[in-house]
Amino acid sequence: MHHEVPEFEFMGLWFNGANMLMISVASLIVFLIAVLSTRKLAMKPTGMQNFFEWVMDFVKGIINSTMDWKEGGRFHILGITLIMYVFVSNMLGLPFAIVVDEKLWWKSPTADPIITLTLAVMVLALSHYYGVKLKGVKGYAEGFFSPMKFLFPLKIIEEFANTLTLGLRLYGNIYAGELLLSLLATGLAHQGIVGTIAAIPLTLVWQGFSIFVGTIQAYIFTMLTMVYLAHKVSHDH
Amino acid sequence: MLTNSFVLATAAEGGGHINTGDIFFQLIVFIILLALLKKFAWGPLMGIMKTREEHIGNEISAAENSRLEAEKILQEQRNLLKEARTDAQNLIEAAKKQGELQREEIVAASRTESERIKEAAKLEIEQQKEKAVAAIREQVASLSVLIASKVIEKELTAADQDQLINEYIKEAGEER
Image (tube, rainbow over all chains, first blue to last red; front, side):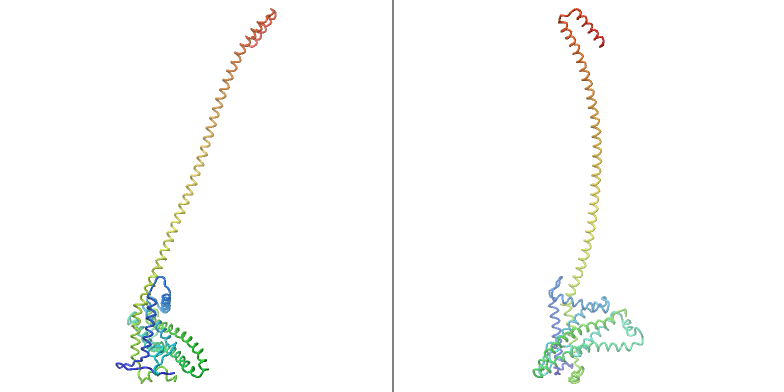
């Protein structure tokens, strides 16, 4: 089921109102959860503090599996924020979609390629920035010619491929999940009483699977972020 | 429908433009989120985790130290106990020796004492015997005189008297 997108032009740039709304909502949810959970910190952690300490250790594990903590420690906060933001974004579109005047307002922000590619480009840009910062211009440039000189063109292609796959993988998974959900909910469920009855378990199953996919994708996105960063900042490559 | 909604087609459908504004919006919001979370959530959380880590580290080393301390004290106490035991053993040994010595001394002393007493008793007995013999001798003399006077008191025939006197003299002579 395709809907219009609420777009408008402002200062020569095109904006998608739904994206802006959902980005804000996702950010706000992440911020509120995180701040409320860590408001009362204790030496003996309880409840949500436990959960967030687990998340921290989890992201720390991801970083440690790709690079030295000496270099990777600086990406810890980025990693936690990314995994939380992507996870919450993936979950937002699952329970429902809101359509006003044929325009789709409530969806996952990560179901838009522009958003996921922005995140991907940001990650890759960071990897280049830290590559130069930690290894120097010479070390950074040498990275493109190792292990062999003739691999240089492939290395250049790899950078673009990494960006594209990182962004589009997330987008594809989430968009496909939402698309099928909307098909079930607005298509099949409107095909008479039998369709409605058939749509209920299918939607249920697909929502459960989408939760799984959304979680996995958040993990993969963070994992690959760390892999790309490690690729640029680690010395032992 | 599906192809229509596919990837970049969304942009194309929207009039051939890309939502560049969304890019900036997403970037800015994400950076703001990152900064806010760092300040209000992750920072303090990391702080407390670090504090806890240090606390646990300190506790572990403190426990290790007190364990070593306890072990040292235990060793000391053990040594002291051993020392005390040896001391006690020595004391008992010495006391035993002392007792033995004393016993022997006492026995020897009592032996000499008894010897002395025996000697003294013997001497006494001897003296008493002498005295008794002397007394008996005296008694015999006086008795013989008495008997003599008694016999004499009787009316003696001359023959009897003679015989008596002879007998006495004879006796006396035999005795001496």
